[in-house]
Image (cartoon, rainbow, N blue to C red; front, side, top):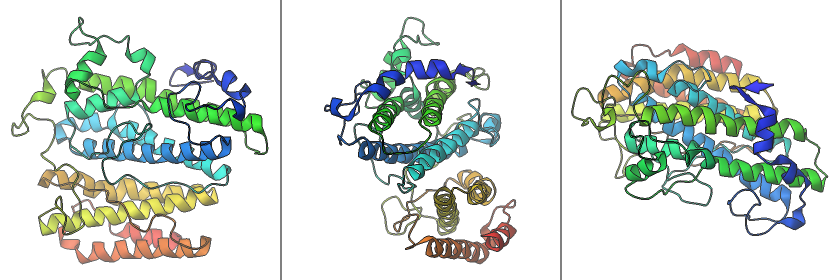
Length: 395
């Protein structure tokens, strides 16, 4: 069976799963055998849960950064943003795949009797697994360079020549975009470590999950990044994507020039008051706060869906993303602002049990509806207030 034209047999071979599955916990050292990711625990269960927690955070962070960048684009680039269907030919296609990856990782956590992870980083953070410091910014050559490098297969990347300068390797050009160095990790290295720990856990025994299916699923996640996402971002970075090739040096057009692809939206804004990067305009901050409320409602629903292994709540979460949240996310950049996707301090499973968790989710939706009604005069023309009544009746 193939996914995106890549055979799973080839994926498993590339992952060196046979070697990972036959190794034991006793073979652990300071790093994983096939991945340079640091090893924290000799117990394979602890190590796998730790790595999956890191992976879930990274998948959400990448999704948010790609989403922020996508909505920073002007209407002339709507085809580049694309439709919300999974694929590697548009920004929204990649974003939906990242959302699917987030779901895959959390479903594996739940099968391992661990809690889902829906937190995101709220400050620049560096570790041996995180690809680069979290930053919400308009689409640019520097941002694309990060996306290209972090999604790439490290071995394959070293042999790719620059499309715009055949005498230069792609890695050299990326270094130039970064200012002379590569302060970025490859996401695939983390998934190599996940596969190794999954193999060690299988060998150790005591855990009953479908290991074969999960080897495949993790292989698919890694392949979608190292092949599809890498190819797409590479085409944007070097400007040879069909929608960019008629505008030479597109990412070096000054932000003040009308031809610049991106709106002048802020970097790392927040709708929380009293901070250095707080959105100044009162009305725009109100809309950004409504964006936060929708984002938090979405994540609370996802948490419930993952814990209950239910597709119903995840469908409701997708409805929020594709209707009210999308409406605000498309509108704010036209006014020089953006949805900040601020972190929620109380987390995304604040209830003591399933019933209290559902009650808190219901209250968050009520809060979102009430706030949206209170600023109705500010809402974009395509904003649908009725969706909250429908969700509250269903949740």
